[in-house]
Image 1 (cartoon, rainbow, N blue to C red):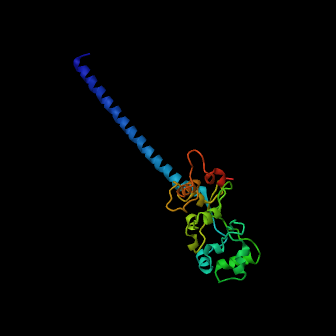
Image 2 (cartoon, rainbow, N blue to C red):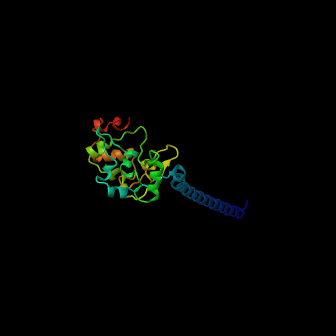
Image 3 (spheres, rainbow, N blue to C red):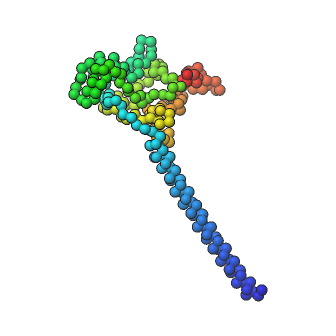
Amino acid sequence: MSTKDEKAKEVMDEGTAHAKGGRDTGAGGFIILFFIIGFAASMVLGWVVFPQLLYSQKQQPFNFNHALHVEEVDEGCESCHFFRDDGSFSGIPKLAQCTDCHEEPMGDTEDEEIFVEQYVTRDREVPWLSYSRQPDCVFFSHAAHVIGAKMDCVSCHGHIGESESSRPYEYNRVTGYSRDIWGKNIAGFKKNSWDRMKMDDCAQCHKEAGIVHTSSVQTERDACFVCHK
């Protein structure tokens, strides 16, 4: 092969190499673009679509005006949510508590009419949906927190006492538990103490209150069996 032919071959080889390099660059760009599109799609599905599918909503039997009741009663929240003589917490009021004031309609609202006609006159308990119902394995003592630790209701329940209507009850389709326990933010971020009621939130509050692990041994008040039965 002549010198001229060898130079021509070298030029062709260099051109082929550059062409291959160009194709490799193009393929790499396509892979990066595909990754970005896939990542964006997964974020939308995981953060927007999935929560919509995972959680469902139910409406309360009728709207309850907390603000009106707090204004009218003497002892605020404790008028309806009180501690019994044995120290146990009454929780959501039973019909008997309500009929002390509502044997006859008080006002002319649609919700009052529903309450009296469908529940009071029929002597039926109102099937309220509890926003704060914990898993069955969890035990929570209101007395320990309200009486012992002097916590206010807002710390866990937010400003529900100022609400004038009942918001929808959101629950997990798989577990059946309220979304208020896990929180609205799927990433786990929260701004307020009442944004969620997970074990991590309880542990953080206990730590701030001085109820913490001592070395490798748990203090009696922070033992697992205190909250998990």
